[in-house]
Length: 336
Length: 251
Image (cartoon, rainbow over all chains, first blue to last red; front, side, top):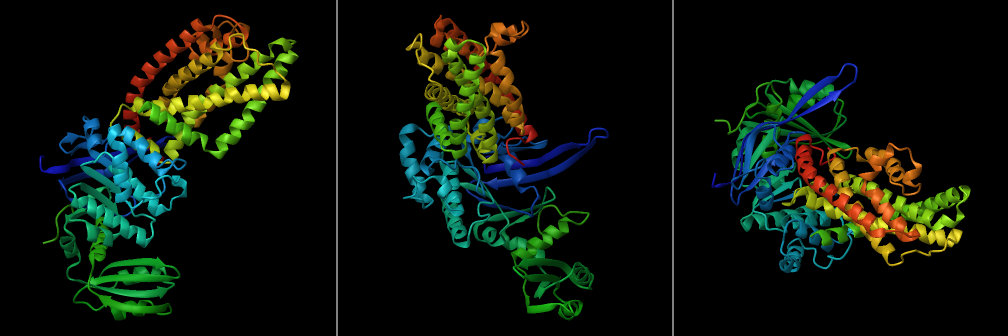
């Protein structure tokens, strides 16, 4: 336990809902269904997964905002259910988006208020707040109301707020969501600087490049369970023995996607929309050339660039997540 | 922590254009209502009492909707989770919020009296001019503490506004803010006796019209402190329930 900043064993959280009055129907949703996790002190750990995979619920179970329905978790050795206040003294929580700050107050007033709440001694507050404004590059804008801030600035202020009491563990829940590429790069820089000072960081993100650049280890969660865990290099092995064909297209139908998926040698098919164009990604066994088959299935569709390349971390992630949707999920480790 | 928190929440609350517009408009309506009620009742000499009563209604509405509204708006703006995550007693975290709503309620009293003077020429001749502001301040502090008890239910319920709507009129009616408690049916007496609003309203009325202010103010503060104690304990339970039921956030 001593070497781990975050530890979870069999963490479980379900929600019950009831609909209808005359014939009430009860439904139980398992948002997190048995997560085991151990993050070392000073580690920058990534938690990746699609929407609804259980990332935010896992973070809220670890940071005491939710009580687990099963399993247990400890932060710096303190139980998240029984030793809530001890845990809260040691953690910071930052989430992405516009919310979580007092918009009609200045950035300085926001930090002052949270400094009081988190018990930062009065004589230290002024110096600590100035330090944090410098760290998140908001010096000069301290007295502006938060409502006048851009999303990137708000996000940096969130991080400053999360660090006021010098937490040993920082939970970052999709901090770069919706921020522009320049602001996202600045955020990554701030997070990397934090990790370099010894703060343990648990980061959830949708962005593979972000996780690849920052995280020492990554866990992929889907369907409330960890599907894979390892360094970015280890996770890439999930796409070993594959090749990727990318086709820029305009107007691919569901029927055509299904037909491509059914071709021999095809392992995964994904379709992303970029403006008016679609980007079709086809992962296949390395020894099988599916290009001719795919182009035949797409006859009649206007096509753009067609490229074949080696798989990336993102391809490995897609493979893991799609595998999770199959009846028997793979839990932990990398394939032999 | 309580002082800084209350001050910053007052700042946050008083910078909302919507709140400012409501605070300007509602006291006019309440002052008008009170004046016409008393004139119609053949008691034009008690117009100051009417204006003070209307002001108290405004204070109560501000505390009630402030406590509920502040919790709800904190839930909307995502700050409820952030403040509840602080390593403090949940009651200590929320007390500055409810005190701030009481302090902003002072405006309702001042505005109602000012509109009463300007629009209807009500003379502001208080029987106890020194005791009046003290009674108002004590009443507001008491209502702020009572607000913590209300806030505990608002933390647990996502639809806190519905509860606030339900409580507004019955409480000001039973507390004798506008109509004397003696004019109400007998069964309301015991209910009125345990509400800090009843004693606070009595203290403010006594200070305006003449009578013993301090016993009523003492009663208001004693009951409010009891509410604070109950709210303190309840808030710890409610915070845990909210973490089980996942109601601190919107989704």
